[in-house]
Length: 357
Image 1 (cartoon, rainbow, N blue to C red):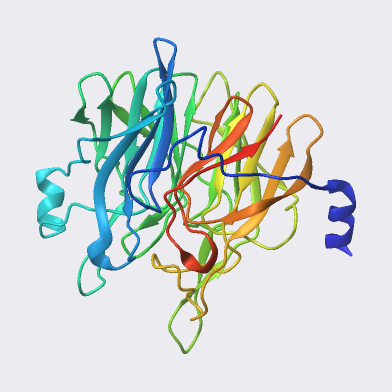
Image 2: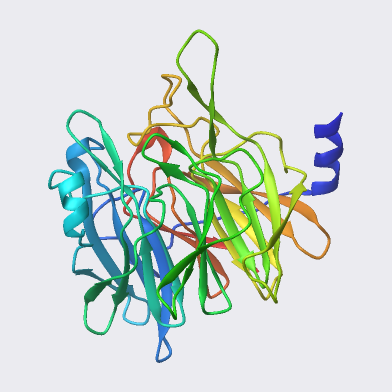
């Protein structure tokens, strides 16, 4: 009954989406699980992609390659690869490629957080490194490391100064931390913790002082057998205290469908006062797209839209399904994903556009 009532409020809408190759060129190489962001400098728009996984999806395909797209010129370029600090090179035994990093932008500065490396024996190391990337000089600057290294987290900018890093995976388990980075002082501080089960692979967006975080994967522990990964269908709205930005009033929001998705793309749209979630998979999976349950994960073609004014959801259905995203972009009335996985876990080199007005 609860699910039926929720769907009654939503208003399910079908609309088309398309890949416009002529408008936005394809990425030079297929890639997924890449950190993405966008920036406007001197009136010019750029898309950026950092690290990720290439098409063969083995541990050897985890890379630190980076790309930039000049929207005006409709051109992609390779840029300097994402570095790794000396301390973390020791921890990773020389591995530099990583998955599940996250990126965001403050003014004209790009920030890249964490991720994890994958070794031949499948061991993983969560990276504490934080970098800022300068487009004009094609250089990275190492910043203060995360107090607790996380990957598969959510990074949200606030007031052109702070970046909230919410939950995520740390080496052997999830954390409920909300770690806040001050871009002006290069310092970290802890905010009110995430109230739900700690998760990885969740998604979220921010509009003004309101954060919405949904889904991901939690750990389930049993009495006489090893733990398992379990999708977590839950949404939480966090209201940041404008006078005390490390205080967050978290509230439960009714889930749009009661079925969790993993590694969706998400963004907050200030003009529309909406937070949007796109794609993802209902079957949580390892980095190669195979579900933890042994079944291949399949991407979703759903778009969830939460209206902050009405506190209600809309669901839209697109023609192209995708998953394995680390962020959602928006420009010229379109939602934009860079790469990701499509049907049958195929790694994409496409720039997918979804009209959204």
